[in-house]
Picture (cartoon, rainbow, N blue to C red):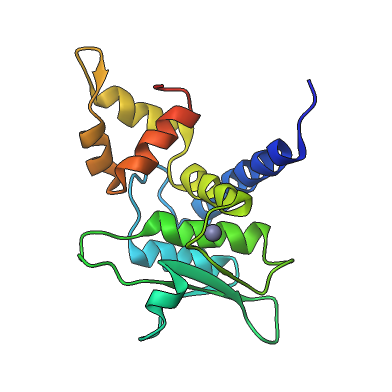
Amino acid sequence: MKMTDAQKDMYLAERVATEMRQYFIEKKILPQDARSLDMDTLAAMVAAVGGTLMPIPEGAESEEGVAYVEKDENDDSFTIYYAKPESENHVPYLSVLHELGHAALHLDKHKKLACKGLGTIHDEADLFARTLAMPRQIFEQVAVENLENGTFNLRNIVKTYREDYFQILQRGQELKIWE
Ligand SMILES: [Zn+2]
């Protein structure tokens, strides 16, 4: 069976995310068994690969969407901007990791990537983010812990990861844990 170019790009996104995750664990920035990430951990992860993480400047929010990444002027570094969440409890870690995915995979061809649209490179960045934050082994473990009478309690899994229902649903589907 031959892989299409699109499949190759998705595979690459997954592989880079897995390698980067391993790097963060070895550097002791990311706990091996982390189930949801806080801002300090995210900032340390971004810094470890040469980037900066900061809130979107006042006034730019409506134009740029929930997060974006920009190459810095004079060197190879980059800055990830995120919209401050409405609640302190919600850390938009998948959005930040989505931008980290763009930085790792797409910033050679783009100077700036804003993420309110849909498209192939955003699908790749989404897969990158879920792979980094929700690796198969731990996600399966969380799923099994929330198996009740033969049914996965998705609401509890969403609570464990403190993320959007849609992302959790999709992660389980792409790992073929549920349909
Ligand atoms: Zn994007």
